Length: 261
Image (cartoon, rainbow, N blue to C red; front, side, top):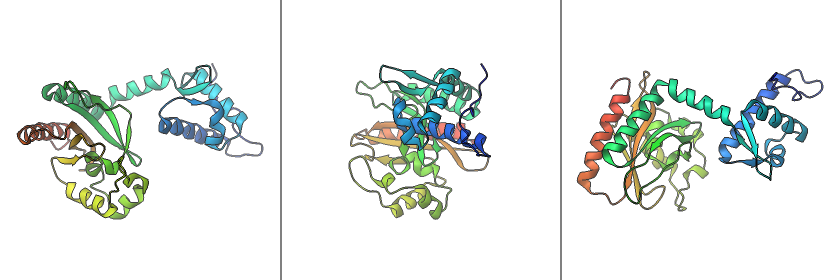
């Protein structure tokens, strides 16, 4: 098949049709990613601010290529098998993700707790990999989930190298509102980021829900900046001695994954 992603995307007299076509593809992918589940094709033109004929042609071409899939009686569209294969190749070939995934699995099996590998994606903390713990009433997490940065221990580590102004520019007012309606003061959050710099473990308790706490260790790259975090999500009422043991194991895992470790 001759895959011309820009066919039908340029408007008459448009000298930058190729750029506009690519921009619309990226905008479509970003919309589906943020939405998190299939969307009716009929909803896309309004959501993307583009002509209906253009979006329908774009969906057709991307569906034929395997990048998108349309399914169901209500004509919903989402990422296709080809995108999954691209992601699989990335995970296999990216050194940090490959080693981090293996370390999360090892740590989770050794401790019985839920483990995560997290990175910064735009203004969100993204879960790249997770391994469920062995508790009967386990605490679960979802690969691909994107969480407001102020809600997590990882977020504080991932922003520790930024200036106050850069943090304020990245964080929206909505990001500061926790799931239970409480609000994190931006100055308090910035102070937490400052205090996280150089630490082996950062802990947040009861921010996302009332029954769990998150332990996060930095994974430092060649530039001396935290590129990712390895985390354990544990019950909020876990014993102090047990938490200390987990913190020690987690800190060692972060050091093993760090370039300077």
